[in-house]
Length: 497
Image 1 (spheres, rainbow, N blue to C red):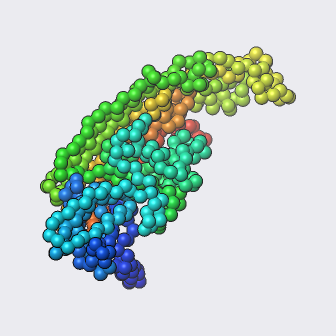
Image 2 (cartoon, rainbow, N blue to C red):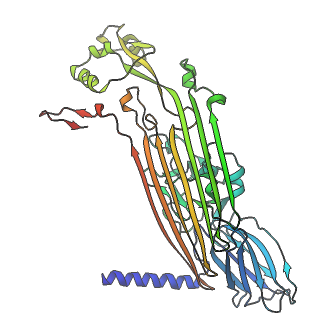
């Protein structure tokens, strides 16, 4: 125990020492403002007070330029900031910058002697390549999230607009056909090699390497896709980083209310249905929701809340071939007993394949099967309407919510607490479908994600961010009907299969 404590203390001291010599310490969901202050002749000026004030929330961060005229304001949230440069005897200069997720924005200033305030307003575009870290990053902005079309309003669909990505193919999906990762291969790696983050914390469902916690589109402020040269601060994956940042409240009340609706009226029939003369499936998809945020105490405390419901009702025809009663009557007694027990609740209603038809497909030859009468019905098609995806997604009832409170605890301390929850229940037939109705199953998801963060500025070259992330991802598959899972083992007592 003493040895463990000693190692912990040494590790903590190393981190503190490293931070003291690296004012631009690694950051995941936050960014930094950095630059150099000089006079009109180009000479650097130490001791300049640099203040960054959030345009939306009014929170401020302050630092002072060092002996080389350099400054860094680390661990600031993705936002627009007014940066003010002040020094007695010099004109005050103000510039406006846009900080993106995990990025560094340069804000140099040249000040001259005088007492008149000069304001320079420049909103810099986020760089694709971070010149300080070498990361190749694409930022999906609030405007893109609002204006770009998304069929399902899933923010992760917009990973497609970043460079060097490829949509997942069939080999990159799980057994149910759902894509792994965010649905895109990044930087040529497997889709499962994507590290998915929410507010800088882990958001991976490790069982199938997919998104752990879905959030409403209107709750996302922006997110970044890092495709190359990312550092070890992110951890876990080698393919790419997708880091989603949720919105914060501002000094003004803002909100949205919406309802998105789609149905089958403008959809086409599937090729399988067309080939078999079956009418197209029917569906309607409703996505109502809201987002609302504002001040609890101006410049000090803000809140944000978002909720979205996804309701899908969908029916399509499942096409299967099942064994006929005539063939079962000629089958081995053990096979017949098995199907009598487990192969119930199916009603064939389509074309029939005789023994001769099957032999012509698979080939003829000697054997017990080919000795059966040529006209014996073997398979019959079962066209069964099921609650499956007909174009609007899996039939389900789903709720997604994000709730967040941000605090400004002083000029050197900020914090936030965010809770996200997702509840989804899909209908039987969405996880596995079968013409034998007892074997249709769905999925129930109950996901929680809590993220608490505290940022403290100790001195001009030492800033720390402490973060606690807790998430629970629960996926429960609906069991098959009890009438299909009870067997009679030797000895006479019942057991569940």
